[in-house]
Amino acid sequence: MPVVREFRLPDLGEGLTGAEVVRWMVEVGEVIAVDQPVVEVETAKAVVEVPCPYGGVVTARYGEVGEEVAVGAPLVAVAVAVAAAGSGFPADSAAPAASSAPSASSASSASEVERPLVGYGVAESRGGRRRRVGATAVVAAPAAVAPVEAPAVEAVPAAPVVVPVISPLVRRLAREQGVDLTALAGSGPDGLIMRADVERAVAVKVSAPAVAAVAAPVGEVVPLRGLRKAVAEKLSRSHREIPAATCWVDADATELMALRRQLNATPGPKVSVLALLARICTVALARFPELNSSVTEDGSGIVRHQAVHLGFAAQGERGLVVPVVRNAQVRSTEQLGEELGRLTESARAGSLTPGELTGGTFTLNNYGVFGVDGSTPILNHPEAAMLGVGRIVAKPWVHEGQLAVREVTQLSFTFDHRVCDGGTAGGFLRFVADCVEQPGMLLRQL
Image (cartoon, rainbow, N blue to C red; front, side, top):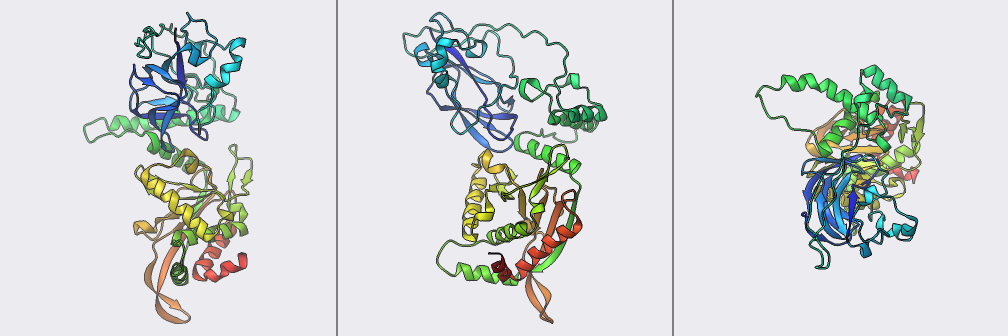
């Protein structure tokens, strides 16, 4: 007899707690192979196909299109032949793997059955949803395998009222915001209530009156899901927690543009303005390392990052995303240009991975491509700084004592005032502006 295996949603990268079902790629009753993609999901970072490590007949799917599935919750159930499963269960047992602990005799084959998916980490159980009761499926595998009926699962009895909170900071936040912890379902391991759970409850509490006011037929209410939901939560947290300040300066970019034309006149890959600005940023951060940092979760310290993981804003089919160039400080201008180009194309195609969208330590935002001069952006939490570059346009400018038409841009710099004072931020921005106006200064830093 076959054994029914439940495949649960794995951790798709860097602390993501769930994913939204975009498209099912298999049907109940369909025979699948090991590592065959079964569902396409949208996380807060990217749209990815999720392969199943079991081969057999799909007996159940959990989650409808548009529904969010928590990490560790069941995705599909698969009827696997005992020989293929290597589980050590007796031939007359069809108990799901999720409800049976492996015996000592099955230890040798456990690595095969429970192996993690290629490209994903192993997620701890985070309290999945209840499995469907009495779900029936017909096994369409080899003729020797009889139809299998997944056994009904009794409803899980109500748990005692225990508030699974470890952090006193979470308790204090809940108390200050009037949130009832006993009414929350934690997203952490074993249902642990995290800070993000309390923040979501506060957001719902605050938005409830506004939603009620919009109940009249005045327009469509579009739910926040996937990327937009993640962006909204991250920007709200940044605005709430970080005391950000912005300073700006106009800079004459004529010499920088002339250098770019000179570089691109020689054989080899073309150098973009963004690549030159990225190179300037890495040099500036070497002089002002306190700006390549982040404040600790509890606000008690500042982490200064050794590597510069440079994020940059890119427009993709899912909206504005921030891909990350790893170890930008050790790349040449040409190498920075190649990586920026690769990530930009992936953003346009919607194929960026979660790893390419996380872990940034500093952001470069070229909003000049939208035809605007300046901005006061919200920092990309938990980063401490962001350089913004406006459009480069011909303007009247005093150059060497004479009025001339020059290529001018506005540079703006937003920073977390907790990591430095205005003198450091002003020094960083002035150095960047000097490098834009006199790019030969970079030779002193190389």
